[in-house]
Length: 104
Image: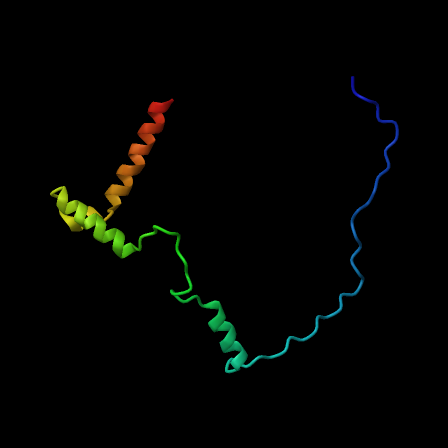
């Protein structure tokens, strides 16, 4: 059983725009040679020493070295083992699609 609606008042929530739009204040000109601009640029840049990685995180070089060593242990070509080709990407997508299809 739904309740009956007896009376509804319309409310106009739209705010009215002013008839005249006042111009914005002119922006101050800043010369590109200003020392303040240099400080802002330097503060936006992040140096490699400031970035902190989670414990146990390996850099790309460490990871590639580990993969090369593993490839040698397995008797594979280290350069081919580390490089991901376009064919590898497509094979990965096809494998994932087959797994999802088989799961249905």
